Image (cartoon, rainbow, N blue to C red; front, side, top):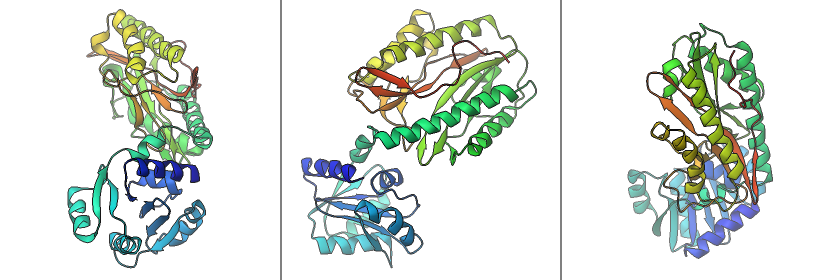
Length: 358
């Protein structure tokens, strides 16, 4: 945590800010270790404060104080307490997280704070993109839980089972293995619905000879995983079997090429060129990858427009090409990749080398 604070202070010095108020829950957890739901941080060039109310003060002393933060319990409103701190500190400029503060809240702060308010975006999020060893270990465990849950589903799914039943089975099994929750609403899309990239589970029954796409993940001690696998329940349509091999080839080509120094655009292009060469370029409409960590969507991004974003050692990014044929079905395969100087490490082990038919 001390290194994270030091890196943030370097950023504040670079943009000539006296301090930064932190209200985004994920950024608060990253800098302070706080897992509660009410609080704010105030970071200056030389000091760090964490403000919360009496419900969380004991938790803050346990989690946040050891990270070098002074704990301040607000008796009135949280922002009124921060206003008192600003008066004592006599700051001239204060950054706030523009992506997390509403316009109405900004109006209130402008009236309450006797300091120059400066909107900021991405200061802490950029730091979060590079994972340390502890973060990598937690994401690795979250990925392992998801992998085990997929194997469980392969052993239990059958024709007549509804998509929602499959999703519930996945979710409960991941919790049984130690997950605190799911990364997002679990996607289970079967038959023609598998052509919907974000086809969340419905009460549709899975029929024989249908493809089934599962996109899911879990949180483990605050960090998330994201995995997609496509399988068939009974022998599927020939073209669907073909596009499975195309998607797999695209996904594995990314694994072969992904490394530090590659731009997000180049990362995306590796997968896209395989799918386009096979004649399915018009049926791959989303980006190839996104970062994961404390949130399910973080930087870096890998899309056709990510030309200014370069992968670095310590990024964890998804690799998830897909092909979606309206009225027939679709295929997506996704792993989480740890980016390294000369390559990458795949964090998932769920089977994918051949189309699994159950």
